[in-house]
Length: 234
Ligand SMILES: *Cc1c(COP(=O)(O)O)cnc(C)c1O
Image 1 (cartoon, rainbow, N blue to C red):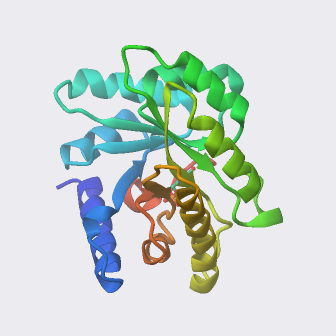
Image 2: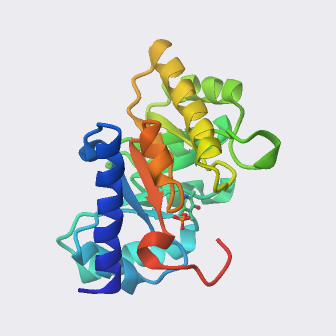
Image 3: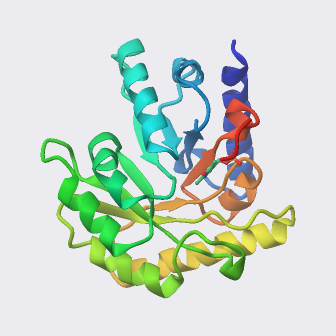
């Protein structure tokens, strides 16, 4: 077995153990393998080990891998999730090549994604990225703004609102990890009470996936624990 296959098995066990600890079904938690900065060979290894959903932060880098995987494993249907900051001039490539976008933080970006999503593809699945760490974090919008953008997305024809995403400020303090995830969960429930049909809480990474599972996450985004330490800045 490759190192990546071993790592995947270990991460899936962490997810199962964390779920069982809080009496959740491990199948409620999707594992998104974050392959940014790693080459196509790493993704091929992971796909051969059974991993199907991959997260990428940089459009051009992702397109190279999407094409490489398509030619190397043409019969394996993979799901590609865009999780990085979105520049306006990249929305078309994202709309044409990805299945999901987790990092929507402006109504204008959502509108462009909807307008540019090709008619032959199903609606693009999207999450609104929320800043749950206040001043400490630059990415994501406030809770009030997230509510506004989420409602706006529900009337965009080529988008399907799935839920919320957050990248809390890193901390080793499990209480603080849980508090940030809890805040996102609260906002998620609030949107549901307002009538939005959403099913995805994208929260938890290599270092804090147990805390996220305890707070109700439905999708963990894991890079380092699967592919190893990244040699260039994320
Ligand atoms: C890089 C990245 C991850 C993965 O982080 P790890 O700590 O390597 O697991 C998850 N989510 C986003 C948005 C990222 O940019």
